[in-house]
Image (tube, rainbow, N blue to C red; front, side, top):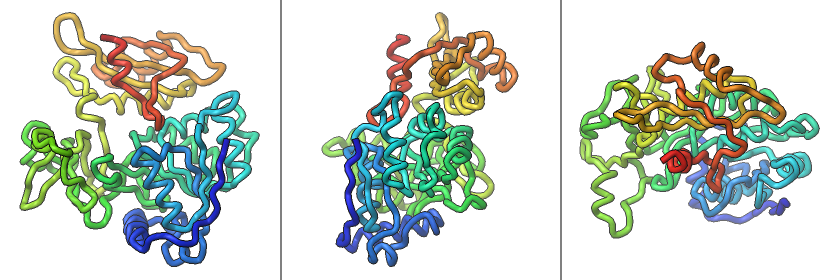
Length: 359
């Protein structure tokens, strides 16, 4: 079911300033409508596949469409249809949206829908990706099949929610990165043990942000605030809990969530790195990697895999693929095939649920 909202001609002037700042930050011409053009009624049509009670959905879909005077197609349940996600494909063909903010699992679903070629998705010009790291292979496949361009943004509810974004220009965009900080935002990479120490460029650490969009703090929880804020050079930085680094060109790259890091024989293994490689397997639809405790000490890597419709594979086949493409300590020691991998209401893979199932 799709609910269609027409152009909205009037909106608060303050939203123009927010929109302009975002447009400058991500170098988004011609994908993003500049405020001057928005005043004339809006050119774009947003596809609302994200729930609006989540910070990503309300800002990048609902408020962005409102601020730019654009049309908005509301999709109450993007998974609707037989097979799942069929109704949202029909909505794209019917309403011809140009912009789609979504999480990686939505792009995975589009790419692997076996009836994808039956629908005209050529209206899609630009897609925002957020909520979780976007595997490069998923990005490439989606763009190849739809002709759209995906650019990643990054942030948290505590940062209202955007900290950085990748340029939309294919020549300057770097797939796999989250681009550059938004105007007025400062990002540092801090030591995982001592957050008062800034890491050199290229080295992994915890991503910390300072800017006008960062929250003042958790309501009546000074203890929690002490855990997530650090003062550096007279500024107050929010510790995101994400591990990443800044490369030689200034692009920010996320390695993984700090709490999801796996320790294998004294080495750090980041689930995202293993998952990105698994996504290059031609039979892979969705995967998730966690650490499982060993009997004596340490952890081992376990991969949960959902295969594409109609595909079959053996554990030995996946193990051989990993052996050819990963360092020994990073390779999954256990493979479990699943028909359903748990995701949140916005479509983010829930590794914690898988960990709970294994405990």
